[in-house]
Amino acid sequence: MPNPATSVTSTPTTATPTTAAPAAPAVPAARAEIRIREIAPGELPVVHAIRREVFIVEQGVPEEDEWDDLDGGCVHLLAEDADGSPLGTARLIHGDQAYNLTGRDDVVLLGRLAVRLGARGTGLGAALVRAIERAGVERGARELELHAQVDAIGFYQRLGYAAHGPEYLDGGIPHRTMTRVLTS
Image 1 (tube, helix red, strand yellow):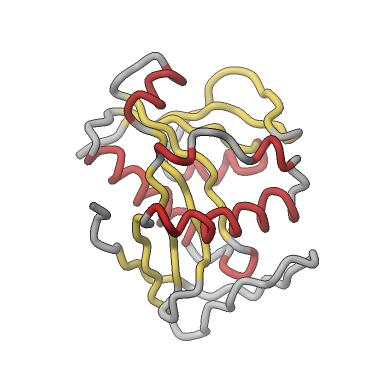
Image 2: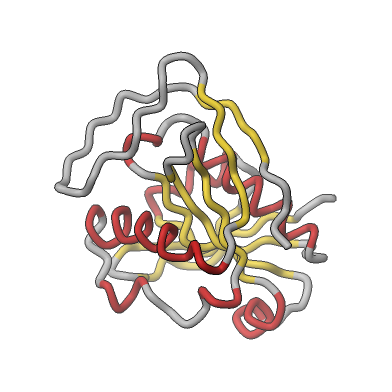
């Protein structure tokens, strides 16, 4: 059963889309209430639309690299504005899928963190990371691993993550593995 929504307050951004992808709804100048919730299985197309916009259209990730067989077993979080418009998403890989990827039963993975262009710079990305961390703790995890685009390492470091190992390409974009110990 999905967890209750988490409300966060967001400050505005004035970013303008630079691609043909549809713009995310603007975050109003007055502080906006953002709801982050676990999606129901039938809502996966909404999450996929955000990921397509951010990763495939904006960043040029090949479509075959974006879609994998993990989505069906993941927890997907969706961030929405007060009107229910989708602003961002992230997924939590847990259980057997996480074990198969990490070799540890106390580690979960954050993946596919995507925030639409008009909602960037508002704190939404950090709120999604914290919500994924809580979902991991609820599932018994002691550590969270993620594969950060090199340009986003500073963002994750500010949230307490440490980079490990060399750079590698994922979807044609340089990445590094990062981890953070979770507390309940």
